[in-house]
Length: 460
Image (cartoon, rainbow, N blue to C red):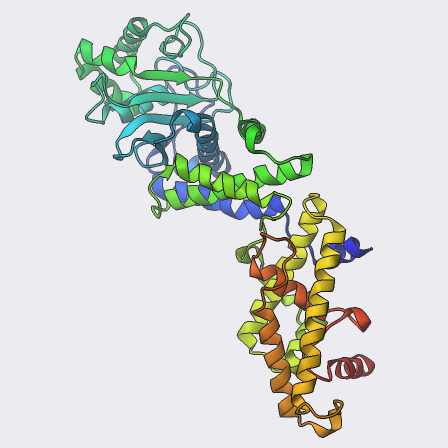
Protein backbone atom coordinates (compact mmCIF):
# COMPACT_ATOMS: atom_id res chain seq x y z
CA UNK A 1 0.00 0.00 0.00
CA UNK A 2 2.75 2.42 0.97
CA UNK A 3 4.50 2.19 -2.40
CA UNK A 4 1.34 1.81 -4.42
CA UNK A 5 -0.03 5.08 -3.05
CA UNK A 6 2.94 6.97 -4.43
CA UNK A 7 3.02 5.12 -7.71
CA UNK A 8 -0.66 5.72 -8.40
CA UNK A 9 -0.64 9.35 -7.36
CA UNK A 10 2.74 10.70 -8.38
CA UNK A 11 4.93 8.90 -10.90
CA UNK A 12 4.87 10.52 -14.32
CA UNK A 13 8.34 9.86 -15.68
CA UNK A 14 10.80 7.04 -15.86
CA UNK A 15 14.30 6.53 -17.21
CA UNK A 16 13.14 5.84 -20.75
CA UNK A 17 11.12 9.05 -20.81
CA UNK A 18 14.00 11.05 -19.40
CA UNK A 19 16.25 9.93 -22.23
CA UNK A 20 13.93 11.03 -25.02
CA UNK A 21 14.45 14.76 -24.64
CA UNK A 22 18.22 14.51 -24.55
CA UNK A 23 18.40 12.08 -27.47
CA UNK A 24 16.14 14.39 -29.46
CA UNK A 25 18.46 17.26 -28.62
CA UNK A 26 21.39 15.24 -29.95
CA UNK A 27 19.60 14.71 -33.25
CA UNK A 28 18.65 18.38 -33.37
CA UNK A 29 22.20 19.57 -32.75
CA UNK A 30 23.51 17.17 -35.40
CA UNK A 31 20.94 18.42 -37.88
CA UNK A 32 21.87 22.04 -37.25
CA UNK A 33 25.61 21.43 -37.36
CA UNK A 34 25.98 19.01 -40.23
CA UNK A 35 23.05 18.54 -42.55
CA UNK A 36 23.93 20.41 -45.70
CA UNK A 37 24.07 19.02 -49.22
CA UNK A 38 23.22 15.39 -49.86
CA UNK A 39 22.81 12.09 -48.07
CA UNK A 40 23.37 8.64 -49.46
CA UNK A 41 20.36 6.49 -50.25
CA UNK A 42 20.97 2.96 -48.93
CA UNK A 43 18.50 1.54 -51.42
CA UNK A 44 20.58 2.63 -54.43
CA UNK A 45 22.53 -0.06 -56.28
CA UNK A 46 26.08 -0.65 -55.12
CA UNK A 47 28.48 1.16 -57.38
CA UNK A 48 26.89 4.44 -58.39
CA UNK A 49 25.24 5.24 -55.06
CA UNK A 50 22.28 7.54 -55.61
CA UNK A 51 22.06 10.95 -53.98
CA UNK A 52 18.99 12.69 -52.65
CA UNK A 53 18.51 16.05 -50.99
CA UNK A 54 18.17 16.14 -47.23
CA UNK A 55 14.65 17.44 -47.51
CA UNK A 56 13.60 14.25 -49.33
CA UNK A 57 15.36 11.87 -46.95
CA UNK A 58 13.66 10.32 -43.97
CA UNK A 59 14.25 12.58 -40.99
CA UNK A 60 13.79 9.65 -38.62
CA UNK A 61 16.38 7.54 -40.46
CA UNK A 62 18.89 10.38 -40.49
CA UNK A 63 18.32 11.16 -36.83
CA UNK A 64 18.89 7.50 -35.98
CA UNK A 65 22.23 7.71 -37.77
CA UNK A 66 23.32 10.66 -35.68
CA UNK A 67 22.13 9.04 -32.48
CA UNK A 68 24.10 5.95 -33.46
CA UNK A 69 27.21 8.05 -33.91
CA UNK A 70 27.04 9.50 -30.41
CA UNK A 71 26.09 6.15 -28.88
CA UNK A 72 28.99 4.45 -30.59
CA UNK A 73 31.27 7.24 -29.34
CA UNK A 74 30.36 6.29 -25.78
CA UNK A 75 31.10 2.65 -26.48
CA UNK A 76 34.44 3.60 -28.05
CA UNK A 77 35.25 5.75 -25.02
CA UNK A 78 34.53 2.95 -22.55
CA UNK A 79 36.40 0.31 -24.54
CA UNK A 80 39.48 2.39 -25.28
CA UNK A 81 39.81 4.39 -22.04
CA UNK A 82 42.17 1.84 -20.40
CA UNK A 83 44.47 2.07 -23.43
CA UNK A 84 44.33 5.87 -23.78
CA UNK A 85 44.58 7.18 -20.18
CA UNK A 86 46.07 10.52 -21.23
CA UNK A 87 43.84 11.19 -24.23
CA UNK A 88 40.42 12.74 -24.80
CA UNK A 89 37.51 11.99 -27.11
CA UNK A 90 35.64 14.51 -29.26
CA UNK A 91 32.42 14.45 -31.29
CA UNK A 92 32.06 16.57 -34.43
CA UNK A 93 35.32 18.42 -33.93
CA UNK A 94 38.12 16.76 -35.87
CA UNK A 95 35.71 14.22 -37.39
CA UNK A 96 32.54 12.32 -36.49
CA UNK A 97 34.49 10.98 -33.53
CA UNK A 98 38.14 11.54 -32.74
CA UNK A 99 40.79 10.88 -30.15
CA UNK A 100 43.22 13.66 -29.32
CA UNK A 101 46.34 13.97 -27.19
CA UNK A 102 47.04 16.43 -24.40
CA UNK A 103 48.05 19.09 -26.93
CA UNK A 104 44.70 18.86 -28.72
CA UNK A 105 46.15 17.15 -31.80
CA UNK A 106 44.08 14.33 -33.27
CA UNK A 107 45.59 10.88 -32.90
CA UNK A 108 42.74 8.96 -34.55
CA UNK A 109 39.77 10.02 -36.66
CA UNK A 110 36.67 7.84 -36.86
CA UNK A 111 33.70 8.11 -39.19
CA UNK A 112 30.59 6.20 -38.09
CA UNK A 113 28.08 4.92 -40.66
CA UNK A 114 24.73 3.26 -39.93
CA UNK A 115 23.09 1.30 -42.77
CA UNK A 116 19.86 -0.61 -43.04
CA UNK A 117 21.38 -3.04 -45.54
CA UNK A 118 24.17 -5.34 -44.43
CA UNK A 119 26.32 -4.68 -47.51
CA UNK A 120 25.48 -1.04 -48.21
CA UNK A 121 28.07 1.69 -48.64
CA UNK A 122 31.30 -0.31 -48.88
CA UNK A 123 31.64 -0.91 -52.63
CA UNK A 124 34.68 0.58 -54.35
CA UNK A 125 32.51 3.23 -56.05
CA UNK A 126 30.11 3.84 -53.17
CA UNK A 127 29.51 7.29 -51.77
CA UNK A 128 30.38 6.39 -48.18
CA UNK A 129 33.84 5.21 -49.17
CA UNK A 130 34.66 8.27 -51.27
CA UNK A 131 32.98 10.80 -49.01
CA UNK A 132 35.01 9.45 -46.08
CA UNK A 133 38.26 9.47 -48.06
CA UNK A 134 37.45 12.97 -49.27
CA UNK A 135 37.06 14.23 -45.73
CA UNK A 136 40.34 12.70 -44.71
CA UNK A 137 42.20 13.92 -47.79
CA UNK A 138 41.15 17.47 -46.95
CA UNK A 139 43.50 17.33 -43.96
CA UNK A 140 47.05 18.58 -44.35
CA UNK A 141 48.43 15.43 -42.74
CA UNK A 142 46.52 13.04 -45.01
CA UNK A 143 49.60 11.67 -46.82
CA UNK A 144 51.79 11.87 -43.70
CA UNK A 145 52.54 8.35 -42.48
CA UNK A 146 52.90 9.78 -38.97
CA UNK A 147 49.56 11.58 -39.10
CA UNK A 148 46.36 10.61 -37.31
CA UNK A 149 45.11 7.06 -37.72
CA UNK A 150 41.88 6.75 -39.71
CA UNK A 151 38.92 4.40 -39.11
CA UNK A 152 35.64 3.86 -40.92
CA UNK A 153 33.16 2.35 -38.46
CA UNK A 154 30.17 0.81 -40.20
CA UNK A 155 27.37 -1.61 -39.47
CA UNK A 156 27.73 -2.92 -43.02
CA UNK A 157 29.84 -5.96 -43.87
CA UNK A 158 32.71 -5.48 -46.33
CA UNK A 159 32.57 -7.99 -49.19
CA UNK A 160 35.57 -9.94 -50.49
CA UNK A 161 37.05 -8.35 -53.57
CA UNK A 162 36.54 -4.78 -52.35
CA UNK A 163 39.07 -2.27 -51.06
CA UNK A 164 37.10 -2.01 -47.84
CA UNK A 165 37.54 -5.74 -47.27
CA UNK A 166 41.31 -5.42 -47.80
CA UNK A 167 41.53 -2.51 -45.32
CA UNK A 168 40.03 -4.37 -42.40
CA UNK A 169 42.45 -4.87 -39.47
CA UNK A 170 42.46 -8.65 -39.91
CA UNK A 171 46.10 -9.49 -40.67
CA UNK A 172 45.05 -12.53 -42.70
CA UNK A 173 43.24 -10.43 -45.32
CA UNK A 174 44.69 -6.90 -44.98
CA UNK A 175 46.34 -5.82 -48.24
CA UNK A 176 47.00 -2.08 -48.55
CA UNK A 177 48.62 -2.24 -52.04
CA UNK A 178 45.65 -4.28 -53.26
CA UNK A 179 43.21 -1.73 -51.84
CA UNK A 180 45.14 1.10 -53.55
CA UNK A 181 44.78 -0.62 -56.93
CA UNK A 182 41.05 -1.21 -56.51
CA UNK A 183 40.40 2.40 -55.53
CA UNK A 184 42.59 3.73 -58.32
CA UNK A 185 40.49 1.74 -60.79
CA UNK A 186 37.23 2.93 -59.21
CA UNK A 187 38.44 6.54 -59.27
CA UNK A 188 38.95 6.26 -63.02
CA UNK A 189 35.84 4.24 -63.89
CA UNK A 190 33.12 5.86 -61.77
CA UNK A 191 31.01 8.59 -63.31
CA UNK A 192 29.08 9.54 -60.16
CA UNK A 193 28.93 13.31 -59.78
CA UNK A 194 28.59 13.08 -56.01
CA UNK A 195 32.02 11.46 -55.64
CA UNK A 196 33.86 13.30 -58.40
CA UNK A 197 35.65 15.77 -56.11
CA UNK A 198 36.94 13.06 -53.79
CA UNK A 199 38.01 10.83 -56.66
CA UNK A 200 39.86 13.71 -58.26
CA UNK A 201 41.72 14.37 -55.01
CA UNK A 202 42.72 10.73 -54.85
CA UNK A 203 43.92 10.71 -58.47
CA UNK A 204 45.99 13.83 -57.77
CA UNK A 205 47.88 12.15 -54.93
CA UNK A 206 51.23 10.61 -55.74
CA UNK A 207 51.42 6.80 -55.63
CA UNK A 208 53.40 7.05 -52.40
CA UNK A 209 50.85 9.42 -50.86
CA UNK A 210 48.00 7.05 -51.75
CA UNK A 211 49.87 4.22 -50.08
CA UNK A 212 50.59 6.30 -46.97
CA UNK A 213 46.94 7.39 -46.76
CA UNK A 214 45.44 3.94 -47.00
CA UNK A 215 48.07 2.43 -44.72
CA UNK A 216 46.53 4.52 -41.93
CA UNK A 217 42.96 3.43 -42.74
CA UNK A 218 41.09 0.66 -40.93
CA UNK A 219 37.63 -0.41 -42.00
CA UNK A 220 35.82 -1.59 -38.86
CA UNK A 221 32.88 -3.33 -40.49
CA UNK A 222 30.15 -5.27 -38.73
CA UNK A 223 30.10 -2.67 -35.94
CA UNK A 224 27.70 -3.05 -33.03
CA UNK A 225 24.11 -2.55 -34.16
CA UNK A 226 22.03 0.23 -32.54
CA UNK A 227 19.80 -2.24 -30.69
CA UNK A 228 22.90 -3.88 -29.19
CA UNK A 229 24.65 -0.71 -27.99
CA UNK A 230 23.16 -0.82 -24.48
CA UNK A 231 24.28 -4.41 -23.95
CA UNK A 232 27.75 -3.57 -25.24
CA UNK A 233 27.97 -0.54 -22.95
CA UNK A 234 26.91 -2.70 -20.03
CA UNK A 235 29.61 -5.24 -20.86
CA UNK A 236 32.23 -2.50 -21.09
CA UNK A 237 31.20 -1.33 -17.60
CA UNK A 238 31.41 -4.79 -16.03
CA UNK A 239 34.17 -3.97 -13.56
CA UNK A 240 32.37 -0.96 -12.06
CA UNK A 241 28.78 -2.21 -12.01
CA UNK A 242 27.02 -2.47 -8.64
CA UNK A 243 25.44 -5.71 -7.49
CA UNK A 244 21.90 -6.61 -8.51
CA UNK A 245 20.20 -6.66 -11.89
CA UNK A 246 18.01 -3.61 -11.27
CA UNK A 247 20.85 -1.57 -9.81
CA UNK A 248 23.03 -2.44 -12.78
CA UNK A 249 20.33 -1.38 -15.23
CA UNK A 250 19.96 1.94 -13.41
CA UNK A 251 23.75 2.41 -13.38
CA UNK A 252 24.00 1.87 -17.15
CA UNK A 253 21.04 4.19 -17.72
CA UNK A 254 22.75 6.92 -15.71
CA UNK A 255 25.94 6.52 -17.72
CA UNK A 256 23.91 6.88 -20.92
CA UNK A 257 22.09 9.89 -19.54
CA UNK A 258 25.36 11.57 -18.54
CA UNK A 259 26.93 10.87 -21.93
CA UNK A 260 23.88 12.19 -23.80
CA UNK A 261 24.35 15.52 -22.03
CA UNK A 262 28.07 15.57 -22.75
CA UNK A 263 27.36 14.82 -26.42
CA UNK A 264 24.77 17.60 -26.69
CA UNK A 265 27.29 20.06 -25.24
CA UNK A 266 29.90 18.93 -27.76
CA UNK A 267 27.50 19.24 -30.67
CA UNK A 268 26.39 22.68 -29.52
CA UNK A 269 29.97 23.87 -29.21
CA UNK A 270 29.75 24.35 -25.46
CA UNK A 271 32.39 21.71 -24.85
CA UNK A 272 35.48 20.61 -26.74
CA UNK A 273 36.69 17.23 -25.57
CA UNK A 274 36.06 14.80 -22.74
CA UNK A 275 39.23 13.54 -21.09
CA UNK A 276 39.50 9.92 -20.07
CA UNK A 277 40.26 11.13 -16.56
CA UNK A 278 36.90 12.94 -16.50
CA UNK A 279 35.15 9.72 -17.45
CA UNK A 280 36.95 7.87 -14.68
CA UNK A 281 36.00 10.54 -12.12
CA UNK A 282 32.34 10.38 -13.14
CA UNK A 283 32.23 6.60 -12.96
CA UNK A 284 33.83 6.70 -9.50
CA UNK A 285 31.29 9.22 -8.23
CA UNK A 286 28.45 7.23 -9.77
CA UNK A 287 29.68 3.98 -8.26
CA UNK A 288 29.96 5.65 -4.85
CA UNK A 289 26.34 6.74 -5.25
CA UNK A 290 25.35 3.07 -5.47
CA UNK A 291 27.14 2.18 -2.23
CA UNK A 292 25.51 1.16 1.04
CA UNK A 293 26.02 4.57 2.68
CA UNK A 294 25.02 6.78 -0.25
CA UNK A 295 22.54 7.14 -3.10
CA UNK A 296 22.55 8.64 -6.58
CA UNK A 297 20.14 11.37 -7.66
CA UNK A 298 18.49 10.53 -10.97
CA UNK A 299 15.47 12.86 -10.90
CA UNK A 300 16.69 16.34 -11.78
CA UNK A 301 14.83 19.65 -11.76
CA UNK A 302 14.57 19.65 -15.54
CA UNK A 303 12.79 16.29 -15.39
CA UNK A 304 9.77 17.92 -13.73
CA UNK A 305 7.27 19.13 -16.33
CA UNK A 306 4.69 21.88 -15.99
CA UNK A 307 1.95 19.25 -15.90
CA UNK A 308 3.68 17.65 -12.91
CA UNK A 309 3.64 20.96 -11.07
CA UNK A 310 0.04 21.84 -11.95
CA UNK A 311 -1.38 18.61 -10.51
CA UNK A 312 -0.56 19.75 -6.96
CA UNK A 313 -2.49 23.04 -6.98
CA UNK A 314 -5.01 21.69 -4.47
CA UNK A 315 -2.64 19.44 -2.54
CA UNK A 316 -2.63 19.55 1.25
CA UNK A 317 1.06 20.48 1.48
CA UNK A 318 0.45 23.45 -0.82
CA UNK A 319 -2.40 24.57 1.42
CA UNK A 320 -0.03 24.27 4.37
CA UNK A 321 2.37 26.75 2.78
CA UNK A 322 -0.47 29.09 1.86
CA UNK A 323 -1.49 29.20 5.53
CA UNK A 324 1.81 30.91 6.31
CA UNK A 325 1.82 33.10 3.18
CA UNK A 326 4.84 31.38 1.68
CA UNK A 327 6.16 33.36 -1.36
CA UNK A 328 4.71 32.11 -4.63
CA UNK A 329 8.09 31.58 -6.33
CA UNK A 330 9.36 29.50 -3.42
CA UNK A 331 6.07 27.61 -3.33
CA UNK A 332 6.69 26.56 -6.91
CA UNK A 333 10.18 25.41 -5.97
CA UNK A 334 8.69 23.47 -3.06
CA UNK A 335 6.31 21.66 -5.41
CA UNK A 336 9.26 20.69 -7.61
CA UNK A 337 11.13 19.38 -4.56
CA UNK A 338 8.07 17.39 -3.53
CA UNK A 339 7.59 15.81 -6.95
CA UNK A 340 11.27 14.99 -7.31
CA UNK A 341 11.44 13.43 -3.85
CA UNK A 342 8.45 11.13 -4.17
CA UNK A 343 9.45 10.11 -7.69
CA UNK A 344 13.04 9.53 -6.63
CA UNK A 345 12.14 7.40 -3.59
CA UNK A 346 9.86 5.21 -5.69
CA UNK A 347 12.60 4.71 -8.25
CA UNK A 348 15.13 3.80 -5.55
CA UNK A 349 12.70 1.31 -4.03
CA UNK A 350 11.81 -0.23 -7.38
CA UNK A 351 15.51 -0.60 -8.25
CA UNK A 352 16.24 -2.15 -4.83
CA UNK A 353 18.69 0.64 -4.07
CA UNK A 354 16.80 1.65 -0.94
CA UNK A 355 15.02 -0.44 1.66
CA UNK A 356 11.57 0.47 2.93
CA UNK A 357 12.71 0.37 6.56
CA UNK A 358 15.38 2.99 5.75
CA UNK A 359 12.78 5.31 4.31
CA UNK A 360 10.47 4.86 7.28
CA UNK A 361 13.31 5.57 9.70
CA UNK A 362 14.17 8.72 7.74
CA UNK A 363 10.56 9.89 7.90
CA UNK A 364 10.44 9.28 11.64
CA UNK A 365 13.61 11.30 12.12
CA UNK A 366 12.17 14.15 10.06
CA UNK A 367 8.95 14.01 12.07
CA UNK A 368 10.88 14.05 15.34
CA UNK A 369 12.92 17.04 14.19
CA UNK A 370 9.72 18.85 13.25
CA UNK A 371 7.97 18.02 16.55
CA UNK A 372 10.79 19.56 18.58
CA UNK A 373 10.90 22.69 16.40
CA UNK A 374 7.09 23.01 16.35
CA UNK A 375 6.91 22.82 20.14
CA UNK A 376 9.63 25.45 20.42
CA UNK A 377 7.68 27.67 18.01
CA UNK A 378 4.53 27.45 20.15
CA UNK A 379 6.60 28.24 23.21
CA UNK A 380 8.08 31.28 21.48
CA UNK A 381 4.74 32.75 20.38
CA UNK A 382 3.46 32.55 23.97
CA UNK A 383 6.56 34.27 25.27
CA UNK A 384 7.57 31.15 27.14
CA UNK A 385 4.73 31.60 29.63
CA UNK A 386 1.95 29.02 29.95
CA UNK A 387 0.34 26.74 27.37
CA UNK A 388 -0.33 27.87 23.84
CA UNK A 389 -3.80 29.38 23.48
CA UNK A 390 -4.71 30.14 19.86
CA UNK A 391 -7.30 32.71 20.93
CA UNK A 392 -4.69 34.94 22.58
CA UNK A 393 -2.24 35.16 19.66
CA UNK A 394 -2.76 37.41 16.66
CA UNK A 395 -2.90 35.91 13.15
CA UNK A 396 0.04 37.95 11.90
CA UNK A 397 2.20 36.54 14.71
CA UNK A 398 1.08 32.99 13.89
CA UNK A 399 1.80 33.40 10.17
CA UNK A 400 5.24 34.88 10.84
CA UNK A 401 6.11 32.09 13.28
CA UNK A 402 4.92 29.36 10.90
CA UNK A 403 6.80 30.83 7.97
CA UNK A 404 9.95 31.03 10.08
CA UNK A 405 9.55 27.37 11.09
CA UNK A 406 9.06 26.31 7.48
CA UNK A 407 12.18 28.15 6.35
CA UNK A 408 14.32 26.83 9.18
CA UNK A 409 13.39 23.21 8.57
CA UNK A 410 13.74 23.47 4.79
CA UNK A 411 17.26 24.78 5.35
CA UNK A 412 18.11 22.01 7.80
CA UNK A 413 20.57 19.35 6.68
CA UNK A 414 20.89 17.55 10.00
CA UNK A 415 18.68 14.63 8.96
CA UNK A 416 19.82 12.53 5.98
CA UNK A 417 18.55 9.26 4.61
CA UNK A 418 22.09 7.89 4.34
CA UNK A 419 25.37 9.07 5.78
CA UNK A 420 26.91 10.27 2.53
CA UNK A 421 23.80 11.33 0.65
CA UNK A 422 23.07 14.99 1.26
CA UNK A 423 21.31 16.30 -1.84
CA UNK A 424 19.06 18.87 -0.11
CA UNK A 425 16.04 18.53 -2.41
CA UNK A 426 15.21 15.11 -1.01
CA UNK A 427 14.84 16.13 2.64
CA UNK A 428 12.97 19.28 1.59
CA UNK A 429 10.60 17.28 -0.59
CA UNK A 430 10.04 14.66 2.10
CA UNK A 431 9.12 17.34 4.63
CA UNK A 432 6.46 18.51 2.18
CA UNK A 433 5.37 14.91 1.72
CA UNK A 434 4.86 14.62 5.47
CA UNK A 435 2.94 17.91 5.40
CA UNK A 436 0.72 16.31 2.76
CA UNK A 437 -0.42 13.62 5.19
CA UNK A 438 -3.35 13.97 7.53
CA UNK A 439 -3.77 12.86 11.12
CA UNK A 440 -0.94 11.90 13.44
CA UNK A 441 1.36 11.06 10.53
CA UNK A 442 1.27 14.61 9.22
CA UNK A 443 3.19 17.74 10.10
CA UNK A 444 2.48 21.44 9.52
CA UNK A 445 3.80 24.96 9.79
CA UNK A 446 1.02 27.26 11.00
CA UNK A 447 0.48 26.93 14.77
CA UNK A 448 -3.17 26.03 14.11
CA UNK A 449 -2.58 23.97 10.95
CA UNK A 450 -4.52 20.92 12.18
CA UNK A 451 -7.77 22.76 12.93
CA UNK A 452 -7.43 25.07 9.94
CA UNK A 453 -7.07 22.15 7.49
CA UNK A 454 -9.91 20.24 9.16
CA UNK A 455 -12.15 23.27 8.66
CA UNK A 456 -11.18 23.42 4.98
CA UNK A 457 -12.01 19.74 4.52
CA UNK A 458 -15.31 20.15 6.34
CA UNK A 459 -16.44 22.98 4.08
CA UNK A 460 -15.17 21.44 0.85
